[in-house]
Amino acid sequence: MTIRRRQLIVLLRRPLPSSAVGAGDLVHPPPPPPPSRLTLSNHLLRYLETCPPDPTSFNQIHAQIVAAGMFLDTFAASRLLKFLTHRLDPPDLPRATKLFSQIHHPDLFSYNLLLQAFCRSLFPLRSFIFYRDLLRRGLRPNGYTLCFLLGCCSAAATLREGRQVHGHFAKMGLLRRCLYAATALVQFYGDSGDPDIARKMFDEMNSRSEISWGSWSWHTLKGAEMTKLGIQPCNSTIVFILCACAKLGELFLGKMVHGFLTVRGLELNITLGTSLVGMYAKCGVIAAADEVFSAMPAKSVGSWNCMIHGLAVNGGGGAAILLFEEMQRLNIPPDGATFLGILTACRHSGDVSGGSEFFSQMIEEHRILPSLKHYGCMVDLYGRAGNVGEALAVVRSMPMEPDAAIWGALLSSCRAAGDWSLGEVVAARLVKILPREASGYLFLSEVFASSMRWDAAAEVRKAMAEMGTRKAAAGWSSMVL
Image (cartoon, rainbow, N blue to C red; front, side, top):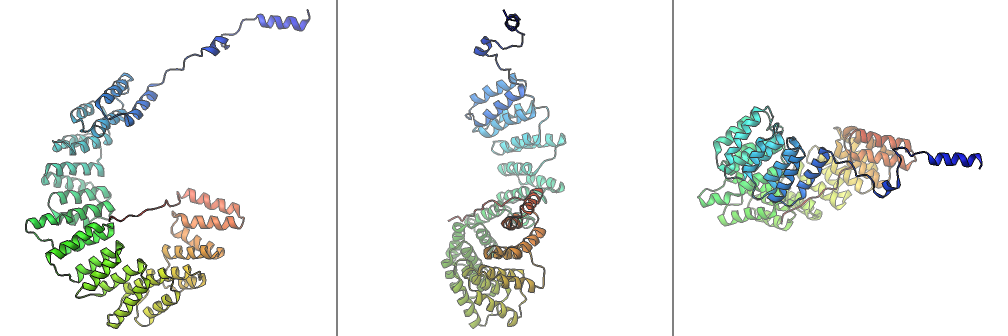
C-alpha cells in the first residue's frame, strides 16, 4: 500500500464536522427562520389595501396584527382606521372611534381620517371633540383638517361653527399658504347660502386652481334656484360665471347661462355680450361667438378685440384681419390688445409680410408702444418662417430685457433652422433665467453632442440633475361638451 493511499484512507475515516452538509440535509433542507414582527405586519397591511371591503376580512387581519404585537404601532393602527372609515361602506364609526382611542400617540393622518369620516355621518359636529383633542396633544392642523371640519359644518348646516373654524385657521396663517383651505372656504360659504362672503374668499385667493374655479362657478350657477325665490342674479355675477366657464372649458354650463339670459329677456349689453363671445371663443365654438357678436347692439373696443383674438386662435386668421379692416372703416381706434390679436392671427397663418406691416402700423400710425407679448409674437412669427436673423433683430431692438417666453421662441427658431451656434448662446440665456426648466439644458446637451463634445454634454446633464430639473411630462387639456 502506497503512502498516498494510506493518507486517503485516514482522511476518509475522520468524522465530519458538525457544520458539514449531509445528504439528508440536501433532501430535507432546514426550515427558513420565522419572519420578524415588522415583516409580518407589513405583509398584513399591504393585504389590507387589496382585500375585500367587508368586516370579516378586517377581523382576520386585525387579529393577526394584535397577535404579532404590532397593534400599538401608530402606522399599523392608522391603516386599520383607514379601512374602517374609507373602505367599508357605510363606515363603521363606532368601531373606528374605539380603535382610535386605543392609539397611544395618534398622528395628524389618523385625526384627519376620523374627521373626514364624520363629514358623511349622522353626527358631523362630533368631529370637534377630536379636533380639540388634536390641539390638546400639540399637533398642528393642515389644510386637509380645515377642509374636513368645514365639510362637517356644511353637513350640519351650522354657519356659526364654520365661521369660528375660519377665524381659527386665519389666525394660524394657513389660508395664505394653502390653496385647499381657501377653496374649502369658498365651498363652505357657497353651501351655506352666503355668496357675498364666498366671492370675497375667492377674490382674496393668491392663486386659483381648476377646483377653485369649479367650486365658485358651481355655486354661482345655482342662481337658477335663486330665481325660484324671485331673486335675480346681477350682471356682475353672470359675467363672473361666464369667465369661470371660459377658463374651465365648461361649454354646457356656458350655454345654460346664455339660455337663462335669453329666457329672461335680459338685454345683451356690452359687458354680457363680450363675456359670451369670450366664453364661446375659448371653448372653440367660433360660429356661436360670431353670432353673439353680430347680435350685440353696441360694441366696445374690448368686444372687437375678443372676437379678433377668438378668430386668430381658432384657425380664422384671414377672418380676423377682415374684422380688423371693418373696425378701421368704422373709425374705431384699436389698442395694444387689438394688434396683439392681429399679430397672433398672422403668426398662426404664417403671414410674415402682413405681420411685419401690422407691427409697423401699430408703432408708426397709432403710436402704440409694443409690449413683451407683441415682441414675442414677432419673434415666433419670423422663427416659424425659418428667418432666424429677423427674429434675432427683433430681440436686439427691444427696449426692455427679453423674458423667458421670447428666449424660448428664439430657441425654437434656432432648432428648426439648425443654427447651433446661435442656439447655444440663446440656450445659455434661457438656463440663466429659468434654471429649473429643462428646455435650455436639453438644447445645450444636443448642441454639444452633435459637435462630439461629449464631456461638455455630460456636464450639462450633471448640472441639470443637480438643479433637480426634469423633462416636462406630456400635458393634456379638456373641454366639457
